[in-house]
Image 1 (tube, rainbow, N blue to C red):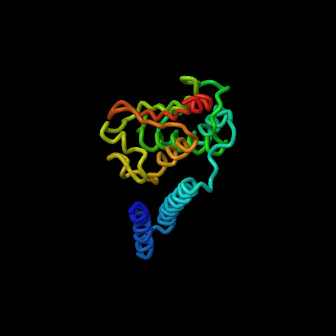
Image 2 (cartoon, rainbow, N blue to C red; image 1 turned 90 degrees about the vertical axis):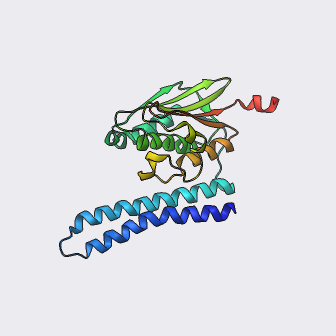
Image 3 (tube, helix red, strand yellow; image 1 turned 120 degrees about the horizontal axis):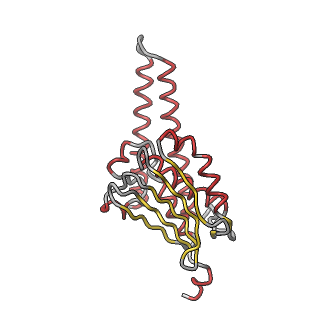
Length: 225
């Protein structure tokens, strides 16, 4: 049933950009159409499809265990800062300010690629949904004997009733339904964090921003428990 539901959800998510692409191609056949503008819009739709397929395949690899999540410990601050710099232009276009703070000696029990995946998805989520004028702070810090990677924005937030569902595959809160995201970013974050024996939670409220906290307990504390 789970597999069937997932296939149905994927089909639904792919149908929308493909329908828009077909509409653009039909419009391109009209005498008064602007081919260049329509081609640019079609490229955008194809990019959306490619992003969705890439996320689906990546999540599938994670769930099957083919993609290794943890491999020793990695200093997180430089990687998070690198992600923020790479997204600076996109954030500026969305009117979102991205700031990186924290302790440069913090290490997370993840491969560098997985830290990059988490930071990128958390930042992309805020850039897409927090709204113009929002500020996103990505923090890497020692916390309760372990380590945490936190993404906190002061944007429009989500309803408290939606918070428990944010990590579901393809779930989007009301405002996000019209967005061009794949609906898989936070699901990927949760799977990576859980696979490294960490926990992830979302807090916030409508009009009061959103905070997503990824916490990784010290390895020794897990053995004691």
